[in-house]
Length: 206
Image (cartoon, rainbow, N blue to C red; front, top):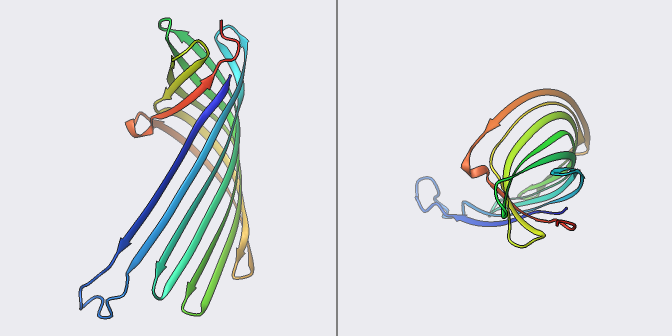
């Protein structure tokens, strides 16, 4: 199977404080532009009937620009992730299948830059983050076959445990910074806001 999910969002907000006490110069308090782009493809192969294994690579980029008459900043964060998965399907009827999607570990790389300018003073921060997380994560889902080989799927919530090792390195105003961390985390969610929709192509489905 080949497919995945795609997300894009754009936000433009503007705030002007016209209170003469808090803003006697009546300058623009803050204007913010933000974009988020995410793509999460899926590549899987059925090793047994109703059992598929595969890979979930992912890429995302977030850009946030803040502007004021005496201040501006530009923050860019890009990330790449990779995680293998195993998925089991159970038939509900001819059009619907229930599935359980499980991952065992994930790798993530993030790179960010933040450039700030106040009047004639410029400050720049860069950061690179490497995360390796042996984890156990399960997501329930359902797939609707719109055609014989095209499935529209949705996942809701998850339950999982992770043991994460991370390393962050970068610079702040030209000074090198390095930080290492270990984190243990258990999560459970059935929040309706966490529903994810995706499209899958089942190339050899009979």
